[in-house]
Image 1 (cartoon, rainbow, N blue to C red):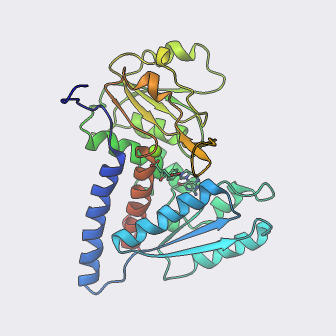
Image 2: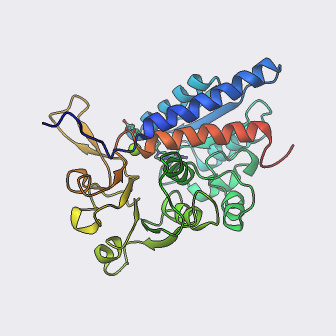
Length: 300
Ligand SMILES: Nc1nc(=O)c2c([nH]1)NC[C@@H]1CN(c3ccc(C(=O)N[C@@H](CCC(=O)O)C(=O)O)cc3)C=[N+]21
Ligand SMILES: [Mg+2]
């Protein structure tokens, strides 16, 4: 066993802690100036285990940085009309600076309708078409948290992106599509050449092997295998799927979209699951809430 192992692990947890410390300092300054602290609300419908964990982590993160937070819980038989009414209450509540509706929602509720009902100024998930449209147009916007977290993580790790070929796998509205747009932008932290791959892509493995940076956002555990990654590539794993495991006290293990055992030895840098992209998502949600509270994007 070597005593001088250098790790290629990208520490998303620590980077998220750094961002939270910066936010906490700003909150302290707001407080000192006699201003109200940012207030995030989260709507959670039903009892999905993953959603419970993520929302709990978001509330804990609010406490950590000095935000106020409110968790609104509803049973999964809430009607769409009732949920839309709750959204509108939050839209008009001057105490609430930003809020999210945790996804997925029960099948009888149309998530697009709920997202469109959120006032763009309070849409700290950055999912509203107004924020997506402004992002695409390069206008100031509340950016979706996972995509902006990935860009921020690469930047803070000193990973060069300009001119690099980035292959994004997955085209969801939440991750794949927006991260491909952000990474292609003419920004110091982006400027990539982006290829967006999905379930209909031909020669996926071959395309992946041409990537300097791979972003895996498919939602299928261990989808990216060693033969798909060029030695020296940077690998960003967005997946967090709970896979049943009777040997664990929780009854499950968290699996990324990357076969870590095969890919980590090849990669120049790789995000672990947990402790990679997930904590960054939460840090960027807090940053959006701070921006919303300060009226940075949509002046009040
Ligand atoms: N309206 C909405 N906004 C979201 O941002 C949103 C959503 N719905 N639905 C689901 C996805 C997923 N997501 C994660 C957030 C944190 C972790 C996270 O903190 N993960 C920890 C591990 C947590 C665990 O132990 O399960 C980690 O990777 O280290 C993961 C996933 C936000 N999402
Ligand atoms: Mg993660």
